[in-house]
Figure 1 (cartoon, one colour):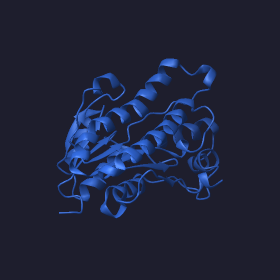
Figure 2 (cartoon, rainbow, N blue to C red; figure 1 turned 135 degrees about the vertical axis):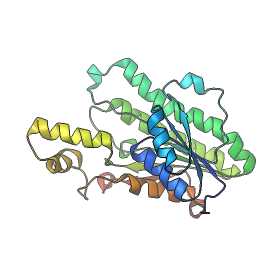
Figure 3 (cartoon, rainbow, N blue to C red; figure 1 turned 180 degrees about the vertical axis):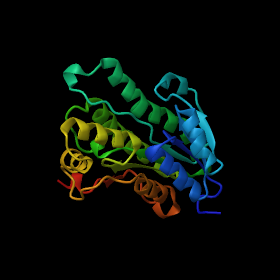
Figure 4 (cartoon, rainbow, N blue to C red; figure 1 turned 60 degrees about the horizontal axis):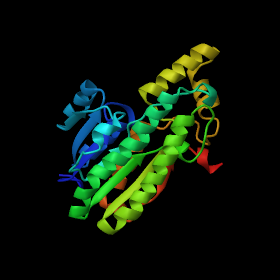
Length: 248
């Protein structure tokens, strides 16, 4: 049956990459998983692997989430996007949209889930942050701002949820091998006329002690552990999985 049998999980951004890996991990541990994503077709494909449910939703439309109520036991806030641009050229609406998606939506989903979690005395909020929730990089103002804000939200949730049996933690990976990152590698290799592995080592992994990308299933394994009873005393924490980047 699995250690999470009888638990319901919601994973946002679950149609691909880290989110899909998290959905598979939680399902393998016995949870009933709902895959939420703006890409409904992609969500259906992932959910079909383990008999899960889907929720096609644009989480950047945060106003639509204000009256939401969720009966979920495990909430994985993973949905996100990236934009690389100097602050002076960063489109203001794009900045606002990214904060709606990666700060407001997690807040509203957490707000929607907590009453059910409080009522049963159990809950897991797992926020997919980033090494950029702890460190900054140039040209990523919206993403870094959003992830730093998510860290704060996660800690406040931990303090409020603790007396009710609810934990809240962040997972902080470095660059993860996802389709989006793979495309960036290929584009940069072509632009610079260098092999893809050199792009990984010289551009993406400059600060890493371990010179490779994180795999999605490695991130998912940490998410699965945080959802388990083994982690019931872990809350308000930020777990780095960045190959040593943040050790500097």
